[in-house]
Image (cartoon, rainbow, N blue to C red):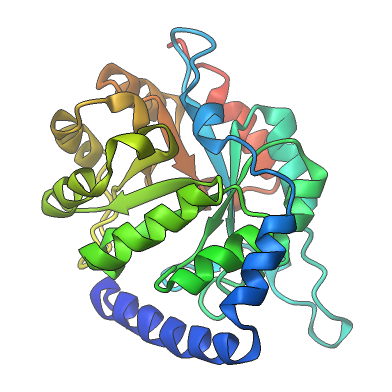
Length: 285
């Protein structure tokens, strides 16, 4: 059984091999031309930071088929064998949109999470919401790939990137009109991320706190509430992992956190859209 510490290393090592192979097939210059031909990115930052009512939480709802820890989240998310892959992310996106999602997070890693890069455009064509590419981005080439695929936002994980690479990829993402969700788990990485964001990028950067301890796989919602004290503007903070109930949203709001990313809990239910509606139903509690 993997610990998250070594599975994260394994994921990054696999991604390095994968990206090297893809780069050999498609030069960065070609991707840049494709990216520049795309319609402008939707405003992911604005979609999740605007406050429409005082006692509400903006939910980024995630499309996620499997994970290294959970396996296939539901049997119907498995590939259909010889008949192909019948998974329809656009249907889930429509359910999320009807239920009140502010934005969509879409897993595109194939080997570990069962995603596809093509899901981005399929989701984006189905709903008017901005779409985050959720993957392990380790190379600037993937930023161009993300925009060329239609992503409105990208995830950059502090535990996977050094300062120079983070800064380079952040600049590229913002330059292409995308929002960057800068994720960390521990306090030192959160501080590192905040120091790396220059003033001009402030309106394009969200800070994500992963409540999952990457070494023990334990999840503690209180982790966000501890670290929020270190964030000058809680309005750009996203709490990730472990959010399941309206009471969880209320607890986070009391701490000043009004944006959450919810994936596995919603995707584990028979109807992810109904699960989201239930999560949002008692927000003012």
